Image 1: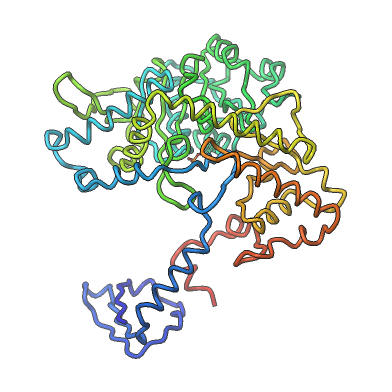
Image 2 (image 1 turned 90 degrees about the vertical axis):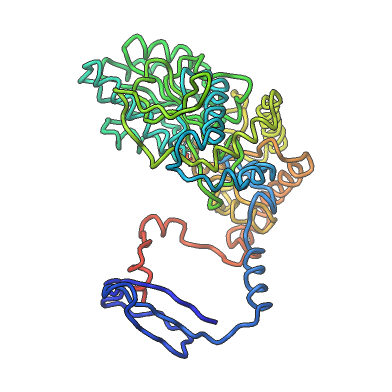
Amino acid sequence: MRLIFELSKEDFKGYKLPDLDVERVDIENIVGKDYVRKELNINAVPENEVVRHYTNLSHKNYSVDTNFFPLGSCTMKYNPRINEEVASIKSLTDVHPMAPEEFIQGSLKLMFMLKELLKELGGFHDVCLHPAAGAHGELTGILLIYAYHKDRGNVNKKKVLIPDSAHGTNPATASMGGFKVVPVKSNKKGQIDMDDFYKKLDDDTACLMITNPNTLGIFEENIVDIAEELHKRDALLYMDGANFNALIGLFQPGKWGVDVMHFNLHKTFSTPHGGGGPGSGPIGVSERLSPYLPVPSVEFDGEKYYLDWDRPKSVGKVISFYGHYGVFIKALAYILYYGRDLEKVAKYSVLNARLLKHMLKGVFKDPYPDSPCLHEFVLSAVNLLKYDIRAIDVAKRLLDYGFYAPTVYFPLIVREALMIEPTETETLQTIKSFAKALKNIVKEARENPEIVKNAPHKTPVRRIKEAEANRNLRVTFKDLFNKE
Ligand SMILES: *Cc1c(COP(=O)(O)O)cnc(C)c1O
């Protein structure tokens, strides 16, 4: 087998090359003097061995296509294959991003349609498709809010209020935007504590970032009042739309007074994610913020579609070209496929979550028994601490039962949190067997805690250092070769 690769000489300086089964190494200058070309003659491997190797590796993957994926906040629903089929149509994949507008009317129409549908679903004045993911949508939204206040001469607006149940990207985004993060407490119902909100809200408040339903899967009942109070002080309302699955087709956040919200197309609108491909985080905005949207937008003049760069107050560009076009196609296919039935996505996702939560009554502690859940719920594994078992152990043991783990230790306000989101695409059968597995694990914790504590037993890899990759980030070429 012949392996050819090109590397800069600089890349190798001082690093040891990995050991390969090499018969012959030719080094020759081919692309100017800065590059070397290496040809490695590796002992031939029969094709069937290669196929078996990769097929066996692929079988070690866990995915929505193989099993239930209750990872809370991530909306790991089934991604219908029709999306992939449509997104791989050659006349859509082979369009050059710099092609003249008159040649790409179909592609522009597709983006325009998606924009109009998201406007309608979210109840917004305008939508920008550009952001590459939810967190990028947050950043774009925060840039708009910054531009809005700057434009109005609101120089003191330095604070962003964020509930303590929020996803970590919210405070990260606000501080990236140069704002000071002010946490707002949650109350016993798992919602924003209004007294604390009034206490923290002042004339220096630029905006509040809320998630609705919030990360506990609980609906923020006071959202309309919150929007009104903010607007009285010329502060704005950002809504994290990651949980839009619970609302789609039923509620339009724009009508609640939300000024900007990101959609996670890869969550609500069914695109593979979590190592499965790129995402997309379009934002919907109120009339107030629309002058500041990134350029260009896709417009229609009654005859043809075109890219509009004429937005003098725009924050500029946030991505190369127009965003993740392939994800747009999948989202559009999904929306058109469901049509008005989209509201069933929301209804069934809530039904499945409530059913599963009901089946787990008494198995784990319910930290907010007075608040019904929407599309996901958070339970607490504190009842297992007396057996020296923690949420992480339950999550690991689930892998032995053939299930992916729920999200654990998030949101931060729930001790030993297990955050479970079944999504609308799971059957009663699956939900029942998942509940049964969790009940079994609690029984094991009581009777044979070691088996839970040392789980997983059946996976290719056992316990790993969960935070190693975050704490000791090694992602560059040099790092890989530096490993002695
Ligand atoms: C997923 C998620 C985000 C971030 O979205 P990405 O698309 O992963 O960048 C933000 N907030 C909440 C509540 C989420 O669940």
